[in-house]
Amino acid sequence: MIITTSSRPNRIIVEKANQLAEEWGERFHQRGRDSIQDLQRRYNEEVLVVGKERIELFIPGEVQPVFFHPNSAMFRIKRLINGGNDPFVQACGLLEGMSVLDCTLGLGSDSIVASYCVGGSGQVTSIEGNKILANLVKTGLTTWESGIPDMDQAMRNIEVVITSYQEFLSSCDDSSIDTIYFDPMFEKSIEESVGLLGVKKLALYEDLTEESIKEAIRVARKRIVLKDHWRSTRFEKLGFTQIKRRSANFHYGIIDLS
Image (cartoon, rainbow, N blue to C red; front, side):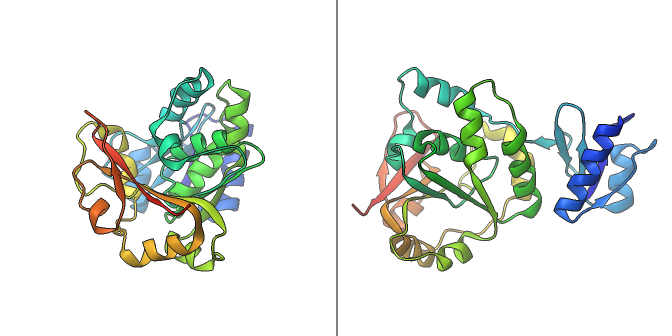
């Protein structure tokens, strides 16, 4: 990946881009008059652009950049603050002080909601196997200002680990995490998810296996939760009790261990 700046950057932006390149172990390119397309053609790699407002990742072949944003976590947390419910929170049985392992970080919306619910006395560890996506989201979690202090603190509390969830689970002690959550790429696509097209290019397409679920059962204390397309065969195949939601494109499945 190439790290560069927006056009006509100030000193602070250049310093920030250089700092990210050093932290992430990537190459910094002085922007000059090069366009993003020029850099993509020259290097045939993803281009990360550090700007004044945000950091954007341009993927070859994609028109729109990928950037960190809390997305649905914003209105979901506002709804929880106002006393509303959230299907993810209910499926995971989230309470203050719990420990949660999110095996599929993505852009982090579910991890943010989980971190808000378990609070400062809890812990959310989020796994992402793609180094570029993990670093992009990790940086966003530490810098984004939502205007909701408790939500900002929830983002700062998330621990992002760059590895495969299989490797991470194998390193965990028995019954050491309250809830383990999986949100793999759906077996059947949902047309409305156009905003995730760029992320799908970065996703690791490893199917969820019986071996991984056995490891999760060993590590989890309370429950294992799967999010998938409502017509997915994974629920039955992997032993999850499917929670059916009328008119919802995706459902949650639960393996209750308590």
